[in-house]
Image (tube, helix red, strand yellow):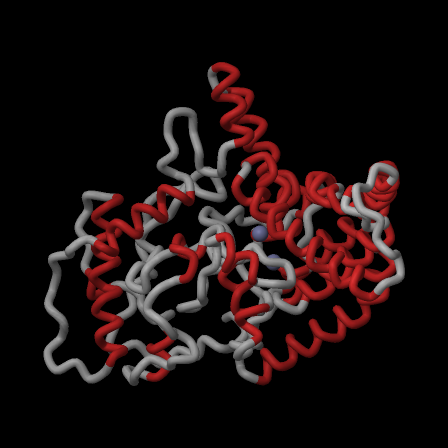
Length: 405
Ligand SMILES: [Zn+2]
Ligand SMILES: [Zn+2]
């Protein structure tokens, strides 16, 4: 596996340079030196660790392969295709468990710790996840796939996933239905409540659509963690959540609370699950569906975008009131990230906000606000906050299709 990754490194560097230059040409700066340096350091160490873990993985796979329940023709093309599908399915579940079990989240969190989103973010790889992910690949040996096949499809999956970490590529038409795309993966890297724990896909997005974790990109995501760690120190990036979860487990009273701290989702506390993604999103759905008393829509709305802005203002006020008693002036809320704001009040572009409902039983279109909620999910701590003050209808056009600012 490592050899394939090595071979791809020149292409990785080339594409990062292209992304950097195109971003500059468009007048925005998606890369930040310290952030990129931290991501690259994480990636280099990860590759080194990967060599050792590959040895362990091959030994484990070879041992289990002797007990395979199916004999597959090793060289047949369809076996490779099957290996790709089975690996991608297992990757989905590996990734999902790494978001929903806190001790696994401790291994995965650093991939989400950048507040930027560009190709270098793809290389911000964990130093511990190669080990915690290893057990998820073992069923492939029992299903009759050779260690070489497992390692090869694993490497190809990682190479594919490098290319979905960009803001330069927008929607890709029908491909969006089948493949994990930059649009889908931007959602995965968001800290907005409605986007948390969505789009776990490796190469195929079909697993998220099948298992109810798909979410469409409806506005420009806020990248990073719900409580950002504010450091570029690779050691802290790699181990901060390990220290947090093990410390919390140590201090938790009794065996049950200790086990819960380790194996419940991020945001969970003994006797309190209000900080978990599941509860936060349920609250968001509830608030979005509840009747909200607020200012009436502006008279003579010029467009669907005006209506969308008004709906978001009401939603945000409801969310704010659900989490705090302090009053909130909705006229100061930031809705500049709405796609329709880019057209300065014109009707929403169907390509970027198509459909009013989410797939897989996720949030309704109205429940898109999250900056009134700063949550304990993912990071395990947080505090209420509100978005920056930007006038709504008079917002300047926002070009949300370029590299991050
Ligand atoms: Zn993830
Ligand atoms: Zn990613």
